[in-house]
Image (cartoon, rainbow, N blue to C red; front, side, top):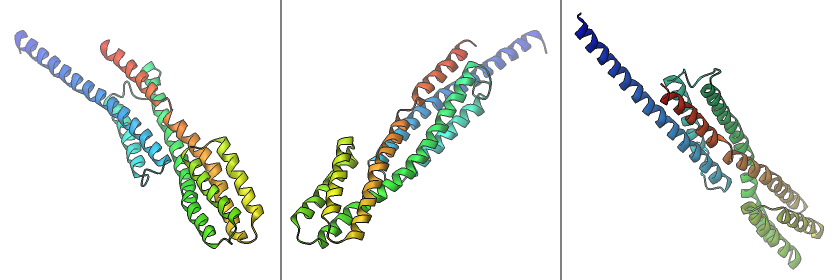
Length: 232
């Protein structure tokens, strides 16, 4: 092969290499954008589940799986950047992945706590209506049951320390006024206690999940990657 032909071949190989690198870069940028979208979607689903607007947890599971796939795609496409190592971009990637692992663990806790909470929230109104149907003609007990029902539903929508204290006071007055239905009232009080305790746990988990640093860490990782790409 003569020099002219060799130069043409080298030029072609360089062009092909450049095209492949550019295509891979575009795909990498796309992975970052999809990760941001999936992370935001994950937060949205958690909030919907918190307010009982999500029929089941399938969307959460599907979104988590997609995030894992995207992180794997980054590592498979550019292992020199997105893998275990001492380079700044590698350390950023490991922090980013660890944040998602922590977030997924919090989501599992959220799902289990929220399931218990939702179970009690479904039982509580029916139990209250049952007590109202069977209660003796006592205006005080009827008023207390209605007060308790309304207060617990309000607490579920917007919990506060003041509402918690009010619920505990009404429940205590209801128990003290009881002349019957002891078993039913004991069960009702148990579910009220679950609602009061688990609501706080669920809200705390919701806050930790939706306010995690995954967005900021994504920006830091993308900036580190972008700096390396422009320095090639």
